[in-house]
Length: 466
Ligand SMILES: O=c1[nH]c(=O)c2nc[nH]c2[nH]1
Ligand SMILES: [Zn+2]
View 1 (cartoon, rainbow, N blue to C red):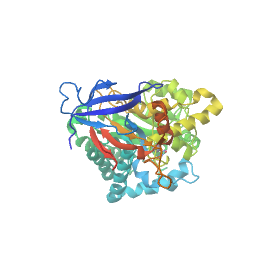
View 2 (spheres, rainbow, N blue to C red):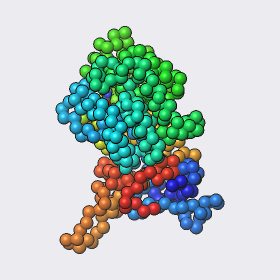
View 3 (cartoon, helix red, strand yellow):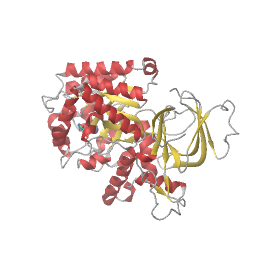
View 4 (cartoon, rainbow, N blue to C red):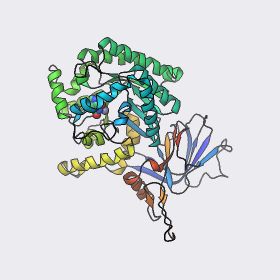
């Protein structure tokens, strides 16, 4: 159903900057038919009787009970085909995990019906966690990847969808590109298909779903393949995503495979893959030179703390990355990561920063405000949409979630006590900031009762009522 003019009333929370959240206890946000925010009122200015001119017939969506509107989350790195393996990694580390768990599952998506089954579930799952924008790796299979893009387009999730390239013999024979030409041809075919879903929007840079060029990681691709993908980027202007410097064994392998390169980041740079439109996942063990190069090229980093811990890759130095001026967002990295939730990733980012702090000092610690920024405005900047999503400002799109917290009522009769819906118990004496903090530390998808992308309702819980 096409969205109508709507006024969202109630508390809202968003990041003003890395360090500062704005918490408005009584607000109203007017969103037009195109899903664009047209006014924001703080305080009592807008009530049922005091609507701005032209908004008299607008629908109202109000937060009922305890809760608030929050910007939709941006997941800057995840693997849709690995969803069935979520939680399965045993004691493996990256390179044996890929061979044991990942390649066998991904290769099975040569079956389109299997891909449809997995992808449909995953897109519904990420939406239910409040993820309004998602950067997806697909597999090497064009039909499956195109299906994922079409699904996001139909369900209304903002997405970057990439057909994976992997032509080197590190990949098993049963799951590998036939050659460089095949890798480039299939990538081009997928880019064209994804742009055909919304040709006008794609031309204007306004499409909800976009293609993303996806060399799996340097060890999976030959230099020639990466150079041709760099050329494909220059030709099409499509974004690029890949992995970098995740695990020490991987870094050693890159040194062996590319002896003429001065570093892992240099391998990508020589191929023309380090650009302003490049998203680099992990970046756990970058050298100072690599950080400087990434900063100079304007490439972005997806921090994936759950995955980095699960595969014992390391604790990424997020404070240092931020201080060197690199743009950072959060990524769930299913199924290296074990949860499709960016809220979970916020907690993991906080924990990992504390482990770094045990060696580096307290400055390494990330605050609640900071991780919420990375989950929204930081992620938006990673995909180049910082002027459109990630916060609530006039002119931005309404990509948002309604968060509801449970109120614990006193005076329940003995034997009739009931738990509130969802994991967060609010007793009534918490400050607004404390409620947000409680949500970050103990909330989950049960607290996300509705989700909108560009004004379109894309997910709602049964208990949601406008
Ligand atoms: O976390 C990761 N997940 C993957 O699928 C992958 N492939 C290469 N490097 C990778 N890292
Ligand atoms: Zn990954």
